[in-house]
Image (cartoon, rainbow, N blue to C red; front, side, top):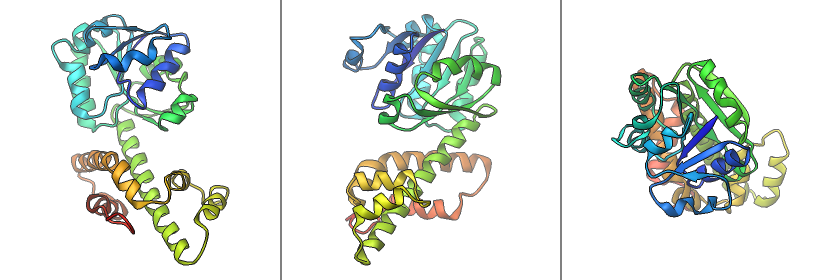
Length: 274
């Protein structure tokens, strides 16, 4: 399978590298040519436009930041759908709302192109060692065609259900992570008031039944509310809006804990966030 990849940023770059090092014919496109410099030592080639990339690809993976970015690279006059042949596949790795997935799928269907939502989870370090999670929504047969490519950078590739369901699962995953980080920060503040060594507690919790990935994240960033709200909150806020849009479209209220989390993220509240 010939693969095209758009979105070689902090997370996309190691994913794309795993794909080409896994033996797949890889074509890249980026708005900034400098983004492609890390691939100079690989067999990957570059395209002048998304359409040119799509013409050289059977599967196009999109790993850009926002819903607007996804719609732009796919639907613009020189976008992916302008160049992709009938029978091709578009995999949306970005964290987006289901409406965006549906818009891309509707436009793609007119050209005989299949779409799956295939958001990823794990972050750069996990991508570098090929141990990411890929959640897939869409036709199972189409998803199965993509599995060998996804297996180059993921150890877990899970089909969630119909088109759009993987995007919902990813939004929930990110909200659970945000909630766990917030809870971990509260717990370490509490432990500090009790006179415990936070580093020692973090090591204990990481190896105990109370372990979550958030424990390690909080410990590695200095147990700091300020760090989380300065560096992580833009992503959490984006993901929260995705979750709110999904819930609103389905007319399902967010769980109370997520509403509380939303308020804390929006207000930047925390022990030393100010």
